[in-house]
Length: 128
Image 1: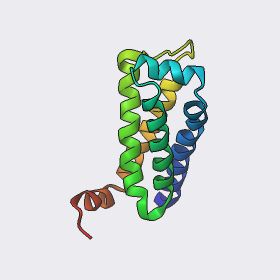
Image 2: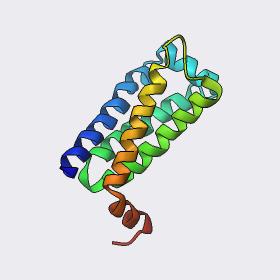
Image 3: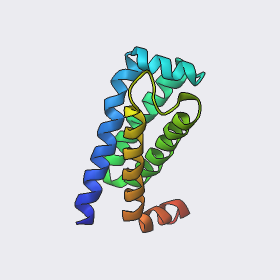
């Protein structure tokens, strides 16, 4: 059961990260607005897109899932902090959709941490 739930959560996180790549890599006006407001346009937008692509791949590969889980958690915490800070919860009249999507990813990451807690501790201790 834990294995199936882990796969479901990892796929959900990866799909959400991959879905946002179109907006970042195509310089969609909403994405440009967000990163301009954060003072990171265009380098931050493109760099974050590349990092999200790498993270989406890592979280899906069984041998690298632990790194993917940790990177996903860090990335989404940054997104949430941006929404609670300079961006605000509602961005460009989206009704908070992007913020609540970030919260959903964060909850998925917390569940993944709980499921893989022992593995993550071992991974972080650098013991083989």
